[in-house]
Image (cartoon, rainbow over all chains, first blue to last red):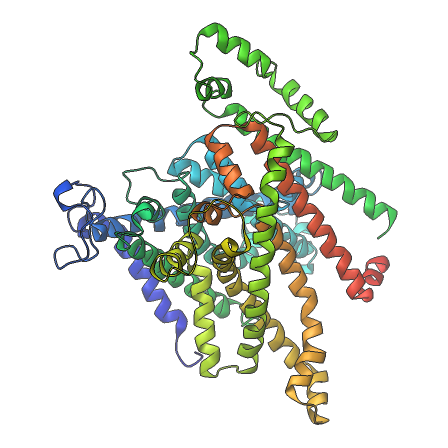
Length: 268
Length: 315
């Protein structure tokens, strides 16, 4: 795949996903939320390309509408957790002492644990809603970034140019924002990009379990859960939302992989 | 490992265990809903203010928060995790019932994954930039991008409903019943392992000792089996440790789809029933399992590669 510009193609596809998600409200065919019992559980046809669900809602309209929730929720989670993780890690690495001790003990606790389980526990106990799902995944996800950024900051701190900056008497804020963060951010971005797809899967998983989006929201994981009992009679209720998750997550995963190759050619 | 290392490690483990259980405790404390109410409702006792108060008192819920946590911790140290609200039996017994199913599923899926992903990963590395490599790499991308619950449902649909190879909907753990859920999990994990194996083997193949062996006329099969494969074991063990920890938590989504009576399903039910002692016990079990596995992984490192422990001493 060397001769093909994977990154370019995937960037276009990612852009397309974002674009569809942004304008989904206007382009989704009618019927994402209008129930019509007379049309319930119809197989895919010219009128309803992906069939209808138990309440007669158009599956394709719901999938297009659900794109917004999946894509933007995942982006939001990644944004929040990288921000918190980067700040916490930078402060821990820079100041050391008790700041570092507190931050790193929290990180140890979070990483000594399969994140998914804790996310399920948090979202489940707090009650199912998309906000709680975001909260749960953020609480679990920041630790990885804090650990990574801290070790990077420690390394940079001992570089000669940094010692020179310190001796010049630069202010802490200036040092962090001008000299430390620009060196840290590329790696954070690469890692964050890899996490977008993962977060989409996690949000869909939580919603599937009933700890994320609630009915009647059009969310892919929730749609699969609602279609589960019709596995025998209406498999299209599962096939299409699942395919939607698969396609969008694959696009983001391949894109982030290509991004990493581009920014960090050592691994491939 | 030196005495100092062991002590600091133990201390870290204790802090982690306390931290994890404390977080869960805080969550259940601030969560909406009253466990006493749930208990009364499930027992179908009419709820007056008086019975509610006395139930709360009986369950120890009227004590201050830190006292509640302290007494739970005190009992937990002695191996008593309290009574499950919903099942009216000790949490430990309830978990012992569910654990074998989860362990069976965990090891079966690991076995399925290893016998497929490891050889395939090696093949992709050997056939680098051949169409086989591209095809398998595309498969790995799909494998890590498919939600496990969707793979599970599709397997159910094709092998359970269409082909009728497997009976579905039995809620007892059996070897036959474990096949489909194990395949679901193996497929998801397999993608990651194939990629890792490919990377590791590619890296090894570029080393000089391989070139030396090629020059001496050793067959590729021999080089791979006797010389490259042993070098992939260490990184593989790290990955396996993480995967087994993940699996022992009971992969809730998969267990629910296949009505598999394991820990994950138990935990989801416990959350729905607001059965806090059971949730707390479950969280403690996972943390312990994870920590023990990490420890075993570290031990196996210095056992498989004695150089590593020596380097540790020099530091």
